[in-house]
Length: 361
Image 1 (cartoon, rainbow, N blue to C red):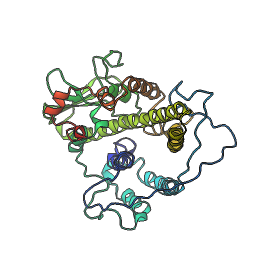
Image 2: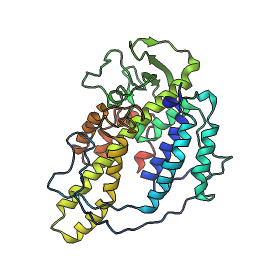
Image 3: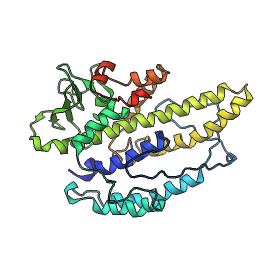
Image 4: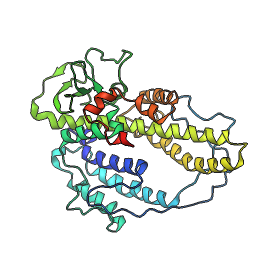
């Protein structure tokens, strides 16, 4: 398969790093020394003109009569990220785009290390002992991600015959018109490119029992040999990473709406309002990034989540993710937030050791 669709080793590496930065105070991995963290403070910039309100999902934005908090630029972080985006990313993708996975990723790996990791002056894993680009055990990685990462576990559903499945295509409901069609299947059906219609089946203990592949045009079953399992698992990891990225980005939208609402609601309580405005000022830049890089209109084909030249999405997933936002708004507790996303019962989760560690916290 072509790199654009199945270079999972690179995407999982970058995705895991993004997840750690966003959600884990100190990411702990084998043979990694903790990178010292520090805070950068800045005075809010003086606004000379009204700020356009970000509208990531159709019809979802701040009221017209409410002000947008001033932005904090976080210059140090912007410099580091900007250096990677401008100098490293084009070289890495340029060295692999259109190449078969069998050609190897050594050139991309060398570029990634030289242009990114070396900036940390040794505060990174020993390159000989840590596999930055994964281990190519796609079936094993798929199972591990589904069992330990809630963003991935949300895609699992129970099978009527027992066990679980991750289903991107249902031949009995090819257009996902049934009311019970899971979000994962709806979202993945909007992805462009070949190889998206792959289902994996698991027993009650989350051991893989088989996989199913369907033709991208006709929807007919393709009878694959067992030796294609790793390749098909690789495709599913791409699907599920894209799905998880949609859920992750929707969290940023919810975060922005909630902090903005808190800012407005606390206007008559000066001490709390000062805190709310300071906090909200850190969120505005993030929603700008989501609206300009992840979700855009159809005129930006390179948008990561909605662009055909990004990860292969479309405008359809903006509508579906808005439904997720609505659902979260009706489940305003941390427990409700997770439960409304899960498609398997707590009992089945516990029996299969799914999200066991996550549920302890």
